[in-house]
Length: 102
Image 1 (cartoon, rainbow, N blue to C red):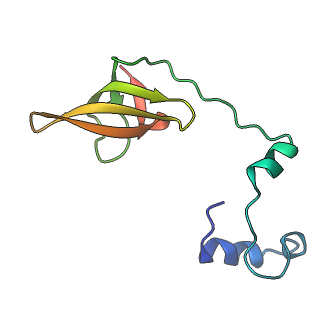
Image 2: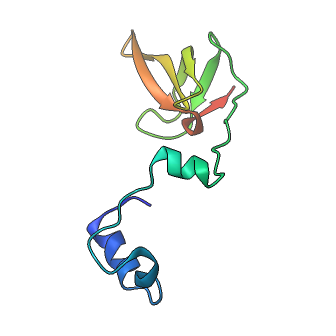
């Protein structure tokens, strides 16, 4: 959950929850080690694109633009690409869920 005053208010005022998270101040996020000890593993998200391919941007300020992939970072689930803006190649960083293969 993204911790904001509003989201904490909802959690704190949900019946039966405060006994679990405690009635005190805002809860502290689990460490990576605690999450791993619980057996929770984030699946590796693969995408069917390669460096040098063109993709269409499907969300964000550059929606509908075409970008050429220059780098893929599977760990961060991001790509670095070039978009032609005003006649110049502009480097951008996009999440995997912001692109689709053409």
